[in-house]
Image 1 (spheres, rainbow, N blue to C red):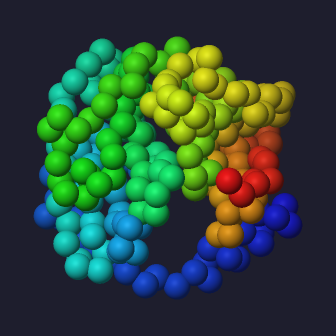
Image 2: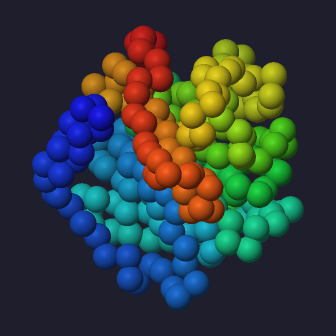
Length: 237
């Protein structure tokens, strides 16, 4: 409880330094899901926002206050079955300063995709979105460690897995033999919703809640509950 209270105090004390208007980049059908921030090799900041309904990523170049939409290939929606599907995005850093890739997948899609951020910043998606292969099951993307490792769980399951996107020799390899179990599910009824590093990159935090049960009316007298705790202490690469 004390930890959650401290986190709440920190959040409300953060100063808003930039804001941008999305009204010219969305339509009535738009369904915005996830947002992540990035820095180019020149130190310029970029923000990426996924729009699941229009199969697009909104890019905002902060310093220039310039924004545009990058429409993704129709292939990324192949085999999707959800009428209100979720488009997950997760940013993994590359070995060089300012380099990296945005990993994309719809919740009900059978495959994982990647686009290098250098192409995304140029608004170029044609021929630049790589199909990394089939997913073992439907995956809920939780976040990254701010470096090369992406964290996820399978839909409806509590175990949390890590995938190092920069494994030596085959940095694009993707599949269950590349995944590492980092946290076993417990019997508390909570599922992981987010994983993120602290502002110094020293500790990786995991946020869990019983939100799925809460919205379905299956939580009993205890109601909604949330837990924030360290997942792993990180070591410099």
